[in-house]
Length: 60
Image (cartoon, rainbow, N blue to C red):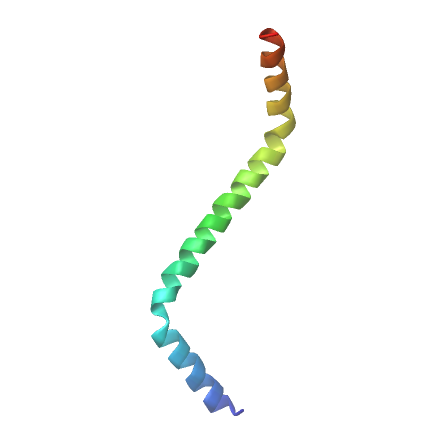
């Protein structure tokens, strides 16, 4: 496969798949949000667990 053929293939892929670009951008945003949520839960997990146990003990 020559470089010219490869470049032509890339140009065709870029120009004809612009609709998929939005889907990729949305999926990247969702992945970023998921990473932030996982980081927040892992950071605050023990604190939230302790707080939940204190509230549960109050209602016992």
